[in-house]
Length: 303
Image 1 (tube, rainbow, N blue to C red):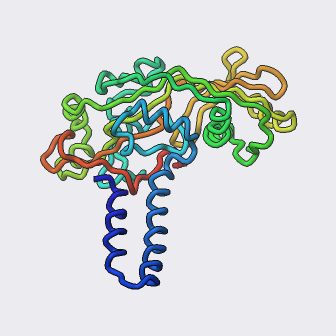
Image 2: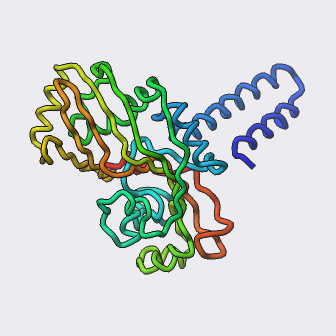
Image 3: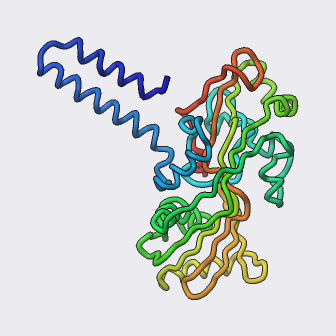
């Protein structure tokens, strides 16, 4: 049963317990506030993304979409094959994606997506966004993170952005192959212990976007500070290379196209939503385990 149906049923049954009009009105107001809170809580994790974007992601993911939690900002780790114990919180993370497969982050996109073939991958339909949607996602989600990577968070002001466009190659739904993953994961002592105690919480699937490119034109006064930071970064020809110092660990290529004009490329695919499960009581990683949709710490917000 959908979690939101429970309070709706409770709402009707509770109202019927009261006989006077005044009593019914009071309890109705209390329950309506509760319903609004629950609905807003379910939507909160996707608040940085435009409605048109969310709708297209929903179409790509399918029926399990309601169990996915969106990250506030894109990350290039902590997706599928990430393991926790007890709860999906940073202090309980025992093996992020690339530790689980025993590899450093690959430079090739295909290798990053396939994760040594421990996941199945489905490429979703192309995601086409209106100019308005591109601008909203860029201003609310991507540019704040880009400014953070450049250590200019305090300077970000969306009112100084003149134009912005957003493009990406494709979106992919990835689901772990439990039969392949379990023998490998159990070689990690902390995962083995968590498994034996039936305490594992893990990212069973995710949704990633490849080759995200943001183009911006900003006011000349704001461009001066970006130019100063770009001058400090290592270069590949005329492209500055920026690495995020936070745990999201994004890698960006930034090319100055002209005065106040920049093309910013996310060098690796990025995770934007995750499907998290708790370990089944009967063992293994597949079966009657429940999806986890609350008390999840957003790894994109961890410094």
